[in-house]
Image (cartoon, rainbow, N blue to C red):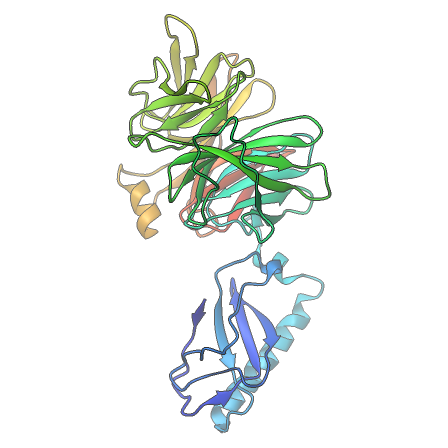
Length: 414
């Protein structure tokens, strides 16, 4: 929260109203007597600490204090003017809610607003839910509702629980900390609404964090059950569950893919050396990995458990970040491209994103061909795309670099 200083305040003033701005739209809340700020514009220790209202999606907010006992006529008139303009603005909205007005479409592209840096998306089968990772420090796991395009924090919350499965994850030192920075996701479907969610986690430890996801009730719940801490040399990115148990994960730092299971621990996948992986998906029979080749700008099909190793690639023309199943025998490979090699890093670090585009390609596994289906220039709505899934007649694209929404592209327009 950022408090805007008022240079013309020359005495301590008990405040009566707080205006919170989110995406340029005001939200008003009356506060109690005795809560005030001092002449420098700083909030006193007893002052009200504002949080973004839930219906505004938890956006970054700033606050502007208007004090009802101000004696300066000029400042009082400005206050009354703001109130009058706000009233006219509310009347002009009609039935449009604040959250709807703040999440407008960009032409044919619509948005689901709320999750910050939604790096990865994992749809829950036979449900209206999509799991979302917020790749920021002290990040969250969200659940998005495809029916009304809202989102809710799923983990961590005040009611979050841990149930350590020491039989499988006995070497795990304990529950994940609040320094958790979620990254890649993989949902392993179960029976009766009981699923397993694998999450690449950074922060206090580099690990695959494992959760029990329950969707049988009115709303989903997430319980931490264990982890597998990565070897020091690895920096994890994407993860998939293996049919025999355990998981596989990519390590862009070392340029390869690693598997883990509770009996054997960690081992490198044969044939993955120097493959340059980022995203990862696995065939339904577990015999093939589908790897997002970031540097090679290609989707790589790599055999698993076969000698000799089989490997082939199809170019997509952009840096692949995440790979997700599409309808039938297709994959959606999502990523981005810049006008020069350094452009992506500058876009992430400095928000200098000129010429950067988010891309999605549909890969036909039968023909092993790729067709671009989304190309969208970087802007404040979608800064840098990283993942794509198909939801009905839409392609949802998540991204990083501080964006606060998921883009929704109509399939018919591609």
